[in-house]
Length: 247
Length: 258
Image (cartoon, rainbow over all chains, first blue to last red; front, side):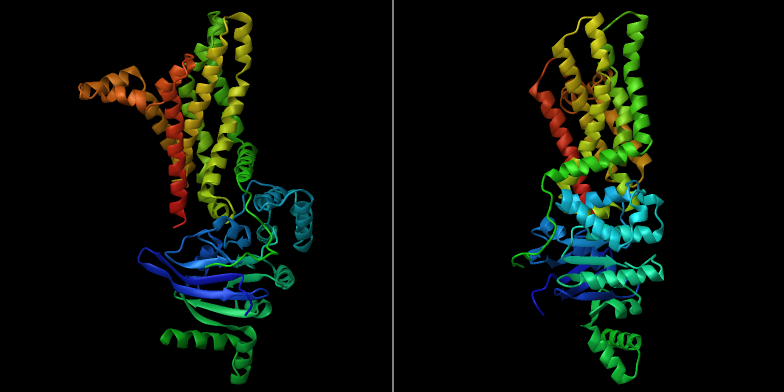
């Protein structure tokens, strides 16, 4: 693995009596697209929020592109693109204003910012809603606007929490294509509980269960093992996770 | 952890210009809705009403009738301007968006407060025709005009800082408004002679009412500045307390990320 763009080490988080994360560690190298799998409440969103800098862990470290996120939080966050589980969009803003604001917040200005927005608008097919206010957009458009806002500064690390939620099949295909275009040179993590989504887009699978990493393996390795065992990938992943839990 | 940042990394933190970016976004968001413009008009009318009454009915052209009741007018409308600063983000969960952007808590807090201060400045600016009326028909003293407007701005900025902090503790704007308005009224009332006399009566040796009026309530400091007396203690009270409210605002944000 080359120099990782994203490194999580020993992340722990407790909400009252509930231990949400019990020492989550993993790294993501440039070019990797990691599918972050897990059931509801397994710790996916908590992990992504800590990586994005919106939640402070009780223990553990996060490194973004070589920067310690605790010591240099602003520089680390400037290198990140984060799509939260809910859109996190400012409702009253026009879509074009919102994208300009997100770009300017990451230091982009003038022609460079305009060109970047044009590129994302074309890629994500946002032209029709560019002058609309966020609250006037459909769920699919909102999700794509949120994606554009997360990517407007061309981040080296992208974190997507349930990115395909609310997208129709065509939009999901477009999202997969976008991931393929984005992946060279970047570290991408996206959470989902849909294994087919991971098979279609990811190079690696990380399964989190009850706040712990239950499985971390390249997708191709898992697919080969599943084929050799005559099982589906889903069966293999569930079996591995169960074995880990028993251990 | 260590290591140099990747050379091809895009995106950088905006630095202190980020305060203006945040303020501009909040300013637009406030004016895009119907609430802030309507409040601005109503508060403007309420603030100039005593002056207009005195000018047309009694033939008095003096700014004292504008500045004297202004704290209570601001106590009613500025909590409405500050209530959305954070409560709206807490309700819509966009507070997480703010946290994910490369702004420090200080930049966010100052930017939001600044947007409110711009609204306050606009409101005060819209009252300046009164100054022209006094100049034409009365005895205009420049020091009192400057002192009065400075006092009004400082008091309003103090209220906005208090309101921003309260707003960061609740997702309900109505709750934020009521709590801020009550707190502002309490602080103003501490500076009223009747209140400090009553309080002094509880402990005549310690004179708690007098102490509160001088060092806790912004009311006497406001009156002092309106009267053209620029005292360091008045400035310290306004700036020191506003800084305290903004610090508490930042602390509330930090707690929300834990």
